Amino acid sequence: MNVFRLAGDMTHLLSVVVLLLKIHTIKSCAGISLKTQELYALVFAARYLDLFVHFVSLYNTVMKLVFLASSFSIVWYMRKHKIVRRTYDKDHDTFRHYFLVLPCLLLALLINEKFTFREVMWAFSIYLEAVAIFPQLVLLQRTRNIDNLTGQYVFFLGAYRMLYILNWIYRYFTEPHFVHWISWVAGIVQTLLYADFFYYYIMSWKNNVKLELPA
Image 1 (cartoon, helix red, strand yellow):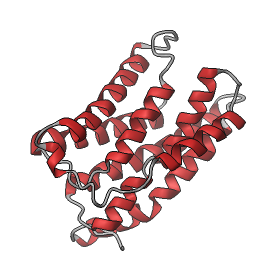
Image 2 (cartoon, helix red, strand yellow; image 1 turned 120 degrees about the vertical axis):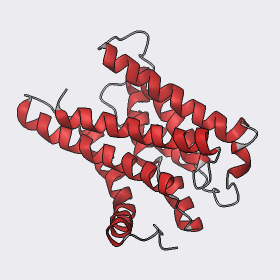
Image 3 (cartoon, rainbow, N blue to C red; image 1 turned 60 degrees about the vertical axis):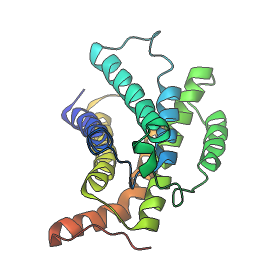
Image 4 (cartoon, rainbow, N blue to C red; image 1 turned 180 degrees about the vertical axis):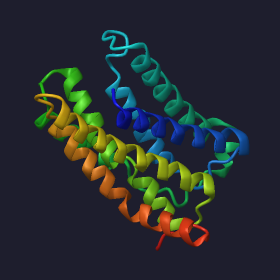
């Protein structure tokens, strides 16, 4: 654990809190991609298969439970809640997210740290997380209607990954034999997907105008 890892975890947690605040308090999921939320639920389900068989620390276990519970509860809200589901923009959230799942699974079968079920699922979750934000970014570009909470949610998600990259750099120089190419490459790809959004988010904040992405 180091300051970059902790900051990354807290930023990731903050993104979830912002999204749940929007859904639970305002009773709206406008601007949120259900496709992305379903991909994240799959990411955490695949990554945390070791939840009850491999104990690292209380902190680690609590964070796993939080992200699992929050991701599936968000999907439930958007699909089943009688008020929230009415605000879901299914007409614009049409990205075929299952096209992302199969290539990530095939890549995990080919490139993994160890060819066991849990390790393949871990690699699959890393690859899938790298592209899971894609349906969300496509939705925002299509609607161009980005409220403050939605913008903050996506910004914190991207910031979490950037902080994790700093964490990896720090660990590379302070821990012997710290090499994780799968996480590194996937993390860089994921961060690059946010680059365009970051630019427009920062410019809107700097100029004090409403955030809009180019169509």
